[in-house]
Image (tube, rainbow, N blue to C red; front, top):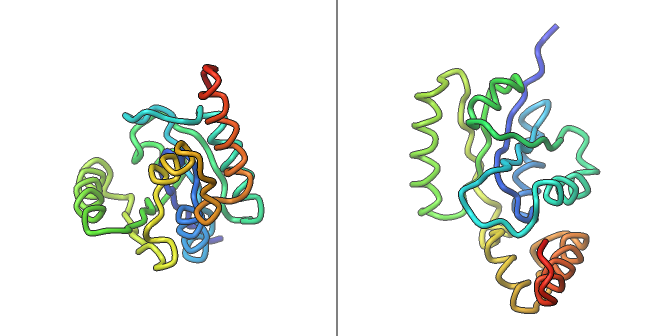
Length: 169
């Protein structure tokens, strides 16, 4: 019996965008199973809690049978190893992304040479989309309907309405 080829696609997914979903769908054609690893302690200010990001992500990938989401709070290569992954999947949008991803790939290869890094170029249709841009657009009162699934638009509206009313979330 041949072992399943598993890949981990790590990120904060705050929130998940059509660009993320495109990379996940394309990776699922290359691997038997793709695990979206939701890092729950990134060094950046998050809009959504880990639980909210997981719920939003799971709804977004509901129609992707070979894609799943799990949280982790270890080194990414250690999480990948624990999941039995043979590869980390990363998406590239810009030249500046390349430099960051190249450095991370070198570091990850040093930590665990058994886990390959597979880079997928962003589809032209989604190359301009980032979670930070989506958060900024939504925070300034516009619905980023072109960039995220409808349930994410709703969640963004609710999150910014809570913040506007002084409620933390």
